[in-house]
Image 1 (cartoon, helix red, strand yellow):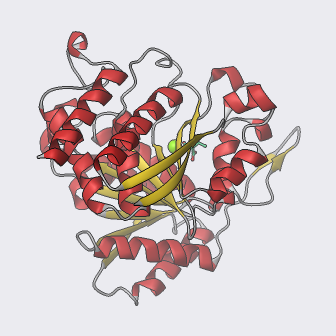
Image 2 (image 1 turned 180 degrees about the horizontal axis):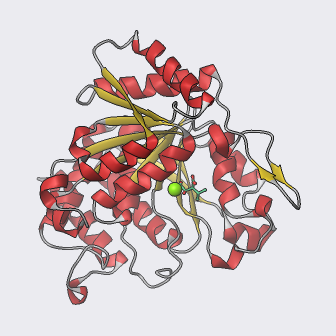
Length: 358
Ligand code: IPM
Ligand code: MG
């Protein structure tokens, strides 16, 4: 029997509720397959600030370093808005990404057919959209030095070195090879030296992946094209900040931010989390959409644990449940018919059971 140790970091806001959904699906997976999970829960973000005065303790970090994978709910909320910058809940996430060396962040934006009308975009524009955004996650302006502020000025540095760009390019070309073979490198090389550098390196790496069709796009144009004609994209690779922005834009194609999972992968470690935030207005109300969390577990199974069949069964369970017209308030038009987080999670899990058992 394969055994994996998973750290869960529920965090703040709706984090704990959707993490419960993630743990439930993990338990169902291990019931129905020859897999065992040891699940250990730790504090992160605002709740860790409240308990220990810092958003990520050394102990939690070392547990994550020792685990086979990590699931994170969400961090942050208005309660910690006035905390000094370097101690904000979000710093936990950044420190985890850096310490676990999670340099590639995969953010798929896939349309589930039953939800095609919940997007603010027209259905003929978005149908069959399937974009994979590869966001560089441990470099760029998020981490560049020098950074700081004084009374009259504040500054950040956008820096990339060759090996950082090369490795994220390789991840992206390999992904494109396993999809439809198209990669768009998004940057701003008409203005930024660091983007010209990025563009040139990606073209250099392309020589090893000649079967992939590579094109370049400026980030402002990419933001527009994703809305105008999302179907043209397969894999998009871009730097940290542009990926942050473009992944929220592409999320809206799918109708709700509550749908999107993400994987952050390094050479040794991995962390899976919903793209959505802590949604303080929904917190504690049993209203949050558990799909992003459940699909994040599906990604964990497929990518880190190499259990492709389990992963695709979970996707199917989510799709079939949606097809039956079920969902949480964010995706169901008639609020009265919307299910709670817990009930919708149970429906998806029952569906998963019936898929495996039949
Ligand atoms: C994301 C979030 C984070 C980011 C924040 C919470 C630090 O927006 O994962 O997209 O900017 O990377
Ligand atoms: Mg973001």
